Length: 123
Image (tube, rainbow, N blue to C red; front, side):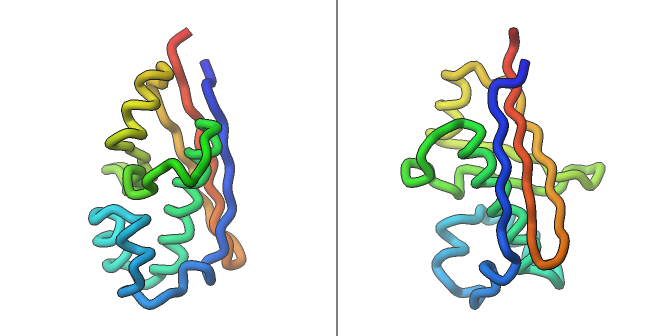
């Protein structure tokens, strides 16, 4: 059963900040920062991950101001697809709501990243 759906768009240029900017530590996990540093398109990579975080928050129907975005991590899985995982208070929230799965899709075009998140729950 679908328990939530969220979508978000982010401009690559919004992530074109100095890599030392505190924003990156506040928003991205250590794993996401490592993956981003290994790529030539760090701004596009970060825009996609930020869009995924915002899409998850929208799927949950909660206020972004009450979420630690670095509790949301989107890394490539072994098959090369994005995989979203959560931790901390956000994980507790999703467990309390009966969320059993989180699906994420990312795409990039024309300097914009888009993410769609679908939450699933048992019927």
